[in-house]
Structure formats: structure tokens, C-alpha cells
Figure 1 (spheres, rainbow, N blue to C red):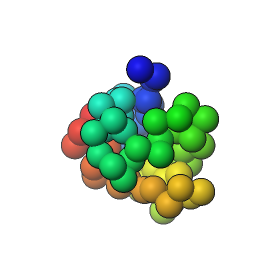
Figure 2 (figure 1 turned 90 degrees about the vertical axis):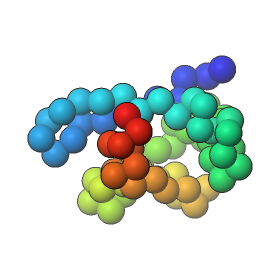
Figure 3 (figure 1 turned 60 degrees about the vertical axis):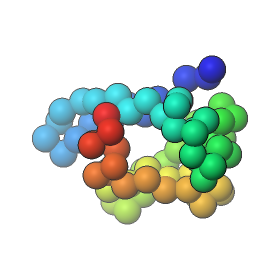
Length: 69
């Protein structure tokens, strides 16, 4: 399985790693991110309050990332 991890730095400079490896396999809406090149297109959205993949119309909020990391 490929590495599907995001390195997060929160507003208070805490650092976390969010591992989406299982999520991209489990949730149909995230399956387009299985491809390494697709996952690598992650961008900050909403002034840093989300991560998104615009070409795939996939977004996840900072709250979700923080609670799951």
C-alpha cells in the first residue's frame, strides 16, 4: 500500500501526521486518492482550514484532520 500521509502543522505549531492509507481504501468518496500522483496533488484550502484536491473535488476540514491525527 502506498503512503497516503499528510504532515500537519496546527495554528499553535503542534505537528501531527494524518495517515489516510486506510481511508482511501475504505471510503468510496476518497478512492480517487489511491493513486499516488492524485494524492500528491493535495493543497491547502480555505486559508489553511482544509486540505483539498480540486481536480477531484475532494475536501477534508482541519477539524477532521485534527481529530483523526
